Amino acid sequence: ALVPSLSSERRRPSVEPGGGGGLDPVPETRTSAGRPVAVVQALRTGSLSSRRLQRSTTDDPARHRAPVDGPSPLQPGSPSGTARVRSTSGGGGTPTTPAAAPAGVPPAGPGSPSRLAQPRWNTNATARVSAASGGAGIDRGGSLPSPVSPVAADKAAHPVTPPRVLRPQARAQLVETLAAQREAKSTSAGLLTMYINRTNAAWAEKQVWEPPSVVRSVEARTWASTESAEVYRSDVLRKLRNGALAVQLLAGADYLPLPSGERVPLWSCDPWRLVEALRPGIMPHGAERIEGVGLGGRVLCNLVQQVTELVGAAGLSKLRVVLSLNADQELDMLQELAQHNFYGLSRSNVVLVVAERHPGFRWDAAERAFVRDDGPGAANHAQGTGFSMAQMAWPGEAFVLDEDCRKVALPASALEALDAAGVEWVVTRRCRDLSLLAPGGVLDVTALAHRLFTRHQAVRAGVIMDVACVDSPVVARQYGSVVLHQANRINADGSPKLAGQVSELQLADLSSPALQERLEAVRAKDGGRLVVGLGRYLYHVKALRSLLSDVRTVAPRLCLRRRSVSLSLEFAELTQSDGVAVLAAEARPGEAGLLAGPDSMETLVPVVMQQDADAGFRELVVEQVNQTAAH
Image 1 (cartoon, helix red, strand yellow):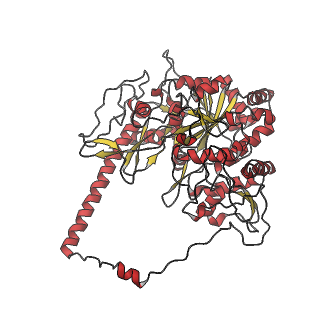
Image 2: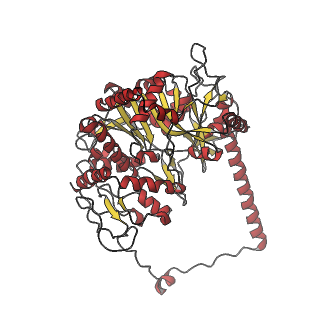
Image 3: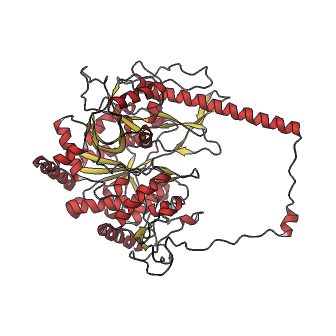
């Protein structure tokens, strides 16, 4: 069944447009919390099952790599290229032949079909400031082919057939038929959307929602000058120095929608090329900028710089980083990491988890059922951050790279491996989060210390999430979720949950008119304010292991994407589980920027300019990007 059935505690109507309304519940095994089972189990064992990783031996490493699509027009190019410090008042260097890839990693493929895909940096051993005279902006190497004019011989060999002219009556019939088909298609899509909205909102409509309790940022600023703050900051540094604090980057679900309809992965996008392609009028003039490093590489360089400054090289050698990506990104990201020596991170401490992208399901009138959409034009979709988190608890899903850059599957799950290595807490961020590029954006010691302090004083939370307070529902939609308190939530012994515990609801959970009214009531009760999630989480490893030990913890959502219905599993679903306590802490003002579309370019430019002007970051780029590429 595509749609999970509904128990008395949490029910979701099934979607069967050809089945007389399709709202009859289907019996299905449930947990005590009433979580749906069928769809999540299908993801593990059915057509949407996750790809298993095999332990690497001495066989051909190419067997372990999934084919990927060609590079995006906005990617920085071949990972074997180097970064370049570019001045807007000078021209650029001349691109040369990229360095050879390490053993076990195939060289980058030929150039992409787009002119923007060509490498925009030189391959000298070090980054340099271009001193040649020239106009501002980014130089474009190469030349475009000259158009070829048709010749008379071609016209004679391929005569053009004149178009057929329809009679007025036949033309009118054709127009009427097309209009009827368009109306029928629109009506069907509308009905399917209605069923999907009912399915997604069924559980949330039965709950009692109140304004959430949030730890305010002003409290953190006041607390930062106390003696208690010094104690907890020292504890955070101790955890970081001993390898008890890890970082997880969720990159597989973050794509940037372009006006053309194309979606490009954020991890490999060069931010300056994004700005030039989407908002060329705001390109900065008179300032140097570093080109040729994608957003993911910038984030890892920033992380290495922060950890080195906080706990030195010895602490950096113990830092564990988990990269959650999808199969389309796998080959490029492995090449990038190997080519740039993991940006200074310890190779054995970088754990990778790859999620397959799957097509959706379309309605088959002959079968009277939803079938896998494998036809021409079908698109594959990422399953969401919740699926990536579920993979963290599945043995065989995580792997590392050996010295020959071949994949070696971990015998246990990623969470078990982290727990065995002594990791207590994991800082989780999404690639779309612009705070990752800011100083202290990945590991803010004071903010982490205050969250741990609050946890010890009140709710013993297993998950602590960063939130922001907004005054407009329109702004809240841009973040994709709303944070509320579930007033009717109870513990296993029947006692009510503490007021400090919150739940994060996706917009798909709030798609019914009844829930929209309740959301407005909550907003009015909280002084016209809504609390939104930022996709930043700090979770306790043992608590999450216990929560994800049951695959039925994560409840799926349905999405209508063009012609097919697909599944989406998000991290926010974990916060609705009875198996974990969740605490909300307000992020500092100005830290809520997300890279969500072309309108985000105005926010992106000053963040990247600040990073490019940092001397430590520039030195790290020269060392980890250019020098490793030269070798």
